[in-house]
Structures are given as C-alpha cells and as structure tokens.
Amino acid sequence: MDAHLFRRVCRALIPLLAGWRIEKIHAPAPDIHSLTIFAAGRKQVLVLRHGRRAPLLYLAAHKPPNPARPDAQVMLLRKHLAGRRVEWAGCDWPRRRLALRMAAGTGGAAGQGTLVLLDLREGMHLVDVLPPDFGAEPDWPHLPPPSGASANLEDAREALRALCAGGSTGANPVLTPALRRTLAALVGPGQHDARGAELPAASEDGVLDACALLVDLDSGEGDVFLYRQPAADGGTGPGEPDELSAWPLPASLRGNRAEEVHESSLDAAAIMGEAAAFTGLADAARTEAAAPFRAEAKRLRRLLAKLDDEERRLRGLLDQRADAVALQGVLYRFAPDARLPEVVVPEMAGPEMPGDDTPGQFASPPRTIPLDPLRTVRENMAAMFHRSDRGARGLAMLERRRAEVARALAVAEQSAAMPPGEGLPPHQARFVPAPPDKGGPGSRRQPPAAGTGSDVQRFRSTDGFLLLRGRCAAGNAELLRIASPFDWWLHAEDGPSAHLIIRRDHPAHEVPERTLAEAAALVAVKSWQRAAARARIMVALVRDVRAVKGAAAGAVRVDAVARSLAVTPDAGLEETLRLDGPKETGPDGGAGGEPAGRSTTRPVGKSPGAASGKPRGKRC
Image (cartoon, rainbow, N blue to C red; front, side, top):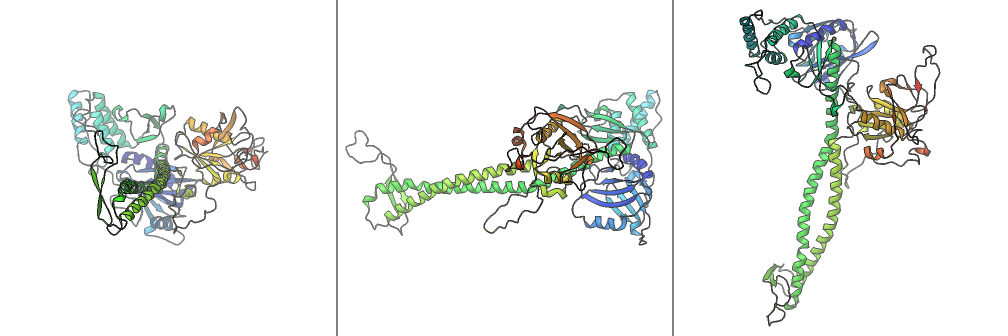
C-alpha cells in the first residue's frame, strides 16, 4: 500500500472512526495488529499489517485468528486503549501514518495512553505527542504544461524522466516506487522495467496520461483499482487478489491480470487485505504445523544413513563365512592346539585341471586369512561361523527395520508437504496431530486430552482443501466450535446426515467446484440418502449456522442456504481422500447402524420475533 492509496483509505476511514469504541487489541502475527471496534451496533476490525513488504491498513468484518497468549506490547496497548473511544483521528499520508486520540479513561489516564500511532513501517505504538512532521504536506512535483506542440510534449517527457530517475522516495514521498514504475511505463524510451529491459517508446497519449495522473493524485480523490491473478486451473471465477492501486496500471504492468474498479477504497482494501493477511496467517500455521514433521523426516533420513552403515558392517560379518569354509577345508593340516597369526589357504577348491597328474590340487592361487593368535585355528574358525550367522540374522532384521523407517519417512514427508492442520488457527491446534513420538524405554506418553478431535474425520480434497466431517453428534457440534465464520458448511437436505466443513484461508478464498462436489459426496455417504442414486446437499456459510440452545448436540439452525448440490454417493471416495486412519464403525458407517455423525432435520414453525409466516431458518 503506497502513500497515495493510503491517503484514499484514510479519507474514507477517518470520518467513521470518531466516537468508535475500541474493545479488543490483538497481534495475530508479529507484523499484524488488529483493533476490534464497536460502533452503530456492530463490530468491525481495523487491521494494520506493517513492514517494508506489502503493508496494509483496512477495515474488515472478519477478525484474523489470534494467538492464545498475547505478547507484552499487546498487553500494554490493551491497558491504555481497551474500552476507550476514539476522540480524534488524523492522517499523515506522505509518511503513511494514522493517529488516534483516545478520550480520557475512567482512571484519568493521560499522557502516554492518549495517542496511538498506526505506522505502516513501524507498526502500532503509544506516543505522548505527535511527531513534528506529522501532517506536513509534501512538495508536489511541477511539470511544464503539456500542449499539442511537440516541443512542449518533449519538455514534459524529459521532466517526467527526471522524476523517475530522481532521488529516493524519502526525498519526495509523492514519488512512491509504484508511481515511478507507472510513470516509467508511460514515458517510454530511456526508462527500464524491473528486469532492466528498456521500455518501448511511448506515444503522445502516454505523456499526457502521465501528466494527468499526477494532477489526479494531487486531488486525492478517485476510484481504486484491484488486480486479480487468472483463475486457477483455467476456471471462470475470480482469481486471487494480487495488487491494489490508486490509478489504472498500464498494459505493460497489468499483464494478464483482471482489473476491477471500486468506488469505495475501504471495500477494495478489505478484499486485498483479507486475502493477504489471512493467506499469510494460514501459511504460517501450515509452516508451524509442518515443522515437527520436517524434523521427524530429517531424523528418519539420518536413521536410514545409519542403517546403511550397519548393513555394510553386517555384510562384512557375513563375508567371514567364506574364510571359515576355506579354513575348514585345510583344518586337518593343523594340530588341535595350534595357534597361528595367519593361515594361507587356496582361494577356492575347484575341479582337477585337465592334464594335472596330482589329484586334490586347487586351480586358484592361495590367499592369507588373518587369525587371532590367542585362539586356536579351530576356535578362530568357529568364531568366524558364529559372526557370519550373526550377520545373516542382523541383515534380516535390518531389512524389516529399513522398511518400517521408509514407510514412516514417506508419511512424515507427506505430512510436511501437506500438514494435516492446514488453515487451522492456533487455538484449534488440538485438531493438528502431535508430532511423531520417538518412544523408547525412558519416554513417557501423556494420556490424550479430552476433545482431541477423535470425533472429527479429516480428508484432503483433490484441490488441496482440508475437509472436516463429524463422526457423531458430538463431532458435528465440535465442527461449529472450530470453524471460521467464512468456512463452508454442508449437510444433507430433508434428513439426518453428517456435518462437514470446508476450511478456507480467508473470506475471498474461492473453492473449486470439484472440491464442493467431493465434500458433498462425503456427506451423502453418511446421510439418509446414501442408497439413493442422487443426493441433495445444502451448502451454507458457517456464520449462518447456529447451534440450537437446549437441543441435543449437533442440532443447528440454518439461517441462509447459499446453494444446493446434487451428487452421487461414492463410498470409495472416503479411502481416496482420507487423512485419518480407519475407525471401527457400525454396519452403515456409524454407531448402531446409523449414518456416522447423523443429526436430525426437523421442520420448525415460526420463531419468536420472526416475520409472520416466514420461519427464521431450519433445524438440522
């Protein structure tokens, strides 16, 4: 988010902040702070992502997942800001800073707690007074007025080139890196893109567009432009948000990305911010979940290397059988108590050579076998046979052990590539399997904690989405407690079935139709329609599904159904997509022969407070 985009976001945001009450402060990640704000009877979340790379400020309806334990800075911010109202808000857009002055608290706190500064470079911190340069307007670059004359256009082109080749952004905050790239693309020859290639010559319209862009940015008003990547797998839906700009990008910078024009800078910033922040947090959660599996895979690779060394040692023991057999063939030559440092024996006993008149001679040249001089020749031979037998037994055991380690390594590598807890926030870590236990005589296994997810089955769709399905009523109820509001929830229509949720990284995360169809099929095989040719499955957002108070576990009310799917139940799909091991179930997949994770669908009449003749929703 460059300074010009930050300026437009702040212009739309500042009028809304006055009088808002800050309820909670969180730090979902080291570079992200979120303020839960209450105003006009609803809660919203002001999210700040700071740093040098892709900083953002946006107002969202969904709060990012928060860690279980806040750090010291968050505790300090809560002490001075929680429960207080915003009295004044100001913007220093050239330096991308937003200041909030809080109303005096009940304790009369003043000084450090009265001002909080939201800086896209440094983050959120409390200050006693605003910096001296806060709110200072920058010097706007002046260009010669372009006209139709070629001389004036060339003067404007040279002035634009000088701006693009000028000093750093710190010297002139108006000329942000994004603006310099756009001006360079519009001006043309003599300028280079990010890869160092010279840009093609620009027409007169390009110079006029560059001059008009600077004039538009000076006003601080206008639309905001969101650019999306092409849809994955050639789909027709919108792709992932990729860039947000305060001006339309030239074709050379836009590439094959789709352009969306938004009148509201807050809406556009929320789309971009939620995609970036939630995706980053999900990636961090996946990395954290994969860390123990990567460590286990590294340990298993070291163990395989040790097994290779052990195999070489055992084969060395096994090779002593040849020496023992050779020594056995010449044992008659030595006295029973003979002790020698070495014995010379033929390499191998072969058939008599043709034309050889001496029977019993060997064709191969002799070789020397070193012996233990403290033992007799007979004792050395017996020790060699004993060691070779040990080598043979050890190799058989080693092959079995190597196969076990190879299987464990394959599982660890697969789990590291696709950790089972993909997309799960930190407070849902109980549904991430613990790292593999090394075991051993001295290790202690802790008993599993209650609610470790044994009532929830995990699947991975073909597109890589995590699917969670309840095994029973308790598992169905648990799904709503662990799901995010923007996850998809699936259930059979007009009858009992298992509940299933599709995990999403952020509210704008598109779920392919193939994943929806696979999730619906997983619900169908654990529903009252499992024997039907086609099953009808409803799809709703988790935020529209609420548990019914006082009812049995798993009973929910659906306030809004997003869509309905018709799928063919496929029992074989479970084994294909399953991440968990099989579990003993009843004859129909659930306890007592009922569909696993079943819940009862009951029609409901009018609810208190509902419109006449229109039920508020349905119960499942």
